[in-house]
Length: 228
Image (cartoon, one colour):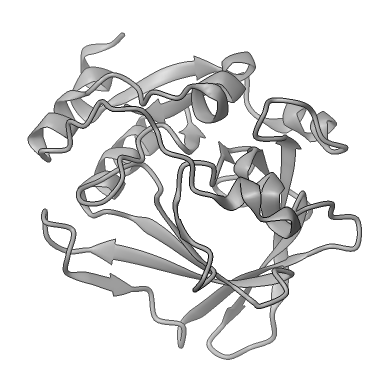
């Protein structure tokens, strides 16, 4: 492992290892320098979010890929899971720190990033500022509003969301979706209409078995980075 990777807290992973590292491993990755500096050194087992027990969205607890459908976007081909997210079924809200951070559950290694110097810096920056996604599902679990959040202190308690007046994000299950296996990710800018900008697909279920969309996994880069 390169010295810079140790400092910023990332590890390079082959595509073939992503399912094991993100979804199947019950223990988080080894503690990195940046996690120690943020006093985020928890090494206990990962805890299931409970999403896998909601039939309408259970495949969100598997390995997900952002599949490009039109104009290229920066995170095309990256993978993630909500299997280890913080989730409350009563309020229908899930939240995850994209690359880890302070406070709450330990989220390192849940979301892959492109293997280059820019993304190594962004992963480090994101965890310092608790870059997070908050997903609020509708009552029928077919659509969800998405807020991008940042916590401005190392305590993780002073947070703000990216203004919806600037950009609104959501996701809607497609007609081909099975138990939350395929979603249109949409956004609207400055009050404009919602437009699809990629498809979020479950390529493997939470138990590691393939879904109908498993061929999309080949769109992921051969090597990626994970926070640790």
